[in-house]
Length: 152
Length: 145
Image 1 (spheres, helix red, strand yellow):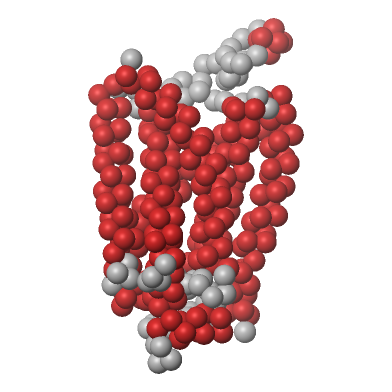
Image 2 (cartoon, one colour; image 1 turned 45 degrees about the vertical axis):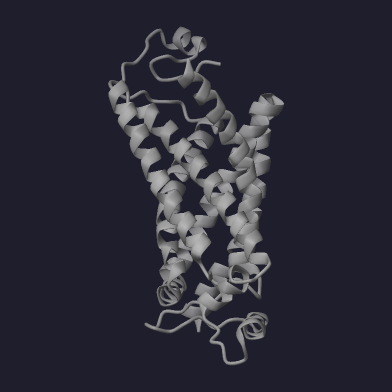
């Protein structure tokens, strides 16, 4: 009874989280790859060992305005424009935490569905479920720690 | 509606052939639009979970500036640009087909599901082309020059 109810809730949540993820991923991709000031992965191939990507003028100005004229414009500093901001960092970290929880639920509930489709043994299904949710829990802790402490 | 398989084909096929083939352990499904969409959704989904694990694990380096810089520099290598493009393709396909599933489940659009597949498929191609252009452009610049 309890199991079937939680499955129905998870089935419903899977669709809700999926819809949320579409919008969150658009934001994520825009900020990380397309925005000239804060995107850390640029439209450039860097293959030399130890070489850093060069950032657009907007990013260079942004980093220097925030961290001082002699601040190095590294990938870390570009990201810290958002995550070390006294005001917006809370919003970005909040967004990242919500994103993390939603993505982990969606991904690992989906993985559970796939596994239970191929594992017929009831005990095997329990093992698969416990294992996959354990991995999700570990990733949640790692993710929360990284996001919350970054820049603080 | 029941799924048609090699063992359990639609009634008219049994009448025409008179027999049902035994295919052994695995069922052979008839691959039509819906089944193709489902298989691609499942494959891209599993790939994205694998990526999610690697991604979150890698972001531990956010707590260490040196490690983070090294990681992001690595993400600019040619092979990662190819991976970036493939990742976008998987995400966009999974998102568009997922949207189709949501519309079918919540709004009862199942009669329109095939039309929906081709419409969203076209949208997906446009999004992959526009969104993936920077990765391809970077590769062309690097290898072309």
